[in-house]
Length: 307
Image 1 (tube, helix red, strand yellow):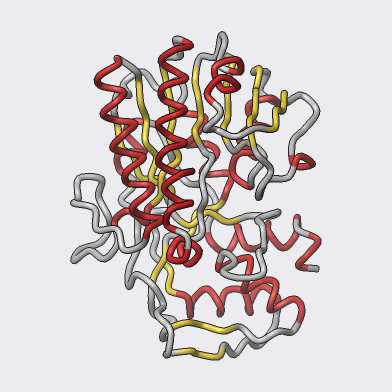
Image 2: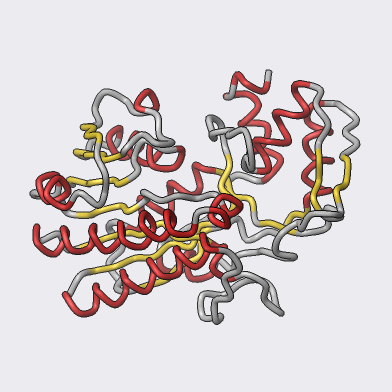
């Protein structure tokens, strides 16, 4: 098959591009490299630097493409509080640009990488796709808006759409920005360098941590699944882990005593997050293979920053 991946030089996009190209597919990537890194991609991937709001460039890249993976997005929740207009321009307007270019080029299927963040605070766990979303940040609002655009435009224009609500993905090579880094990579970096681990809240908040290889399995299955049309599907591990357990797990693996510092003056975010993955299991034949302990060990073994 021929694929186009937007945001394909990022953490998730590059892993997907490399997997698909290694499986013998033609893979095209567009990325503005604002956070992506060209070095992540193997030499089989056809890379173009560009903006997803550049519709003429998108249209050119979409010729003969059979499926689009739309992963290009701004992804920092705290940053979205400061710059909501930028998040709307990329995550919402950019999604509409991709859909319009797909229509004009005759591409029939799109897989949107959305986020478990759209659920926000809910009264029950695990989180099911039929729940009413309760986004609590401009980032979450932008991803939910993108979902609605993809599903609505897909229905109106006869496009096959798949929306994957991806939970807390982690793995080797995950970017570590100076502020608001992803929690597992941040904690591993602190532990490996002797820095203090600062925990917002009491550490009892739960997250569904899913290893990147499992997420890539779900993404690749989404391009060819026969029964999919306007589906919304959770992609996670199906297991809730609180942050105190995460710190203890990292300490056990590294054979270190880790004593986090608790900062109760700042919010620890949503109280509970755990994905109900039954839809993914049924529709995508998805079965997460990597436990949290195994995933952290693999991340340490494969990421030289944590040696």
